[in-house]
Length: 141
Image (cartoon, rainbow, N blue to C red):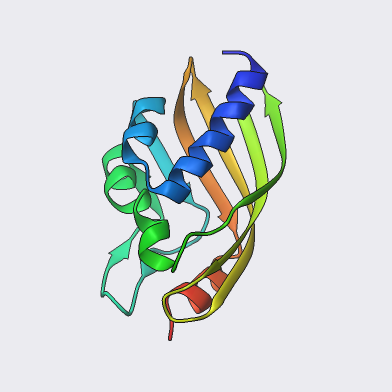
């Protein structure tokens, strides 16, 4: 897959996350796909009692990660993408969110999503964001 196709695929990956499109995410990831939120400790949601991450297997990402945007926001993150950089199998996507949590708080964050390709599929994704902001606005009343 050439770099332009990789760039297009990572943007569509994030759009699929917005839709909670498990089928699409499953179709473009390898069996050994891993996801990592770049933070030091697992996320604990005091509203649900769930604790998870910061590293996920493919199955955990499909079960927990893919539906998370719909679970934590009223109507999505409203991602906007600024630019995409590609270097061999690595693609970095930079963007912002502007969502509203179920607790009524506005959630506006900045991201760098780092993807790694193995052939035509994605085998790794890392998400860099302000994790303190995410916890304060999405998980707390």
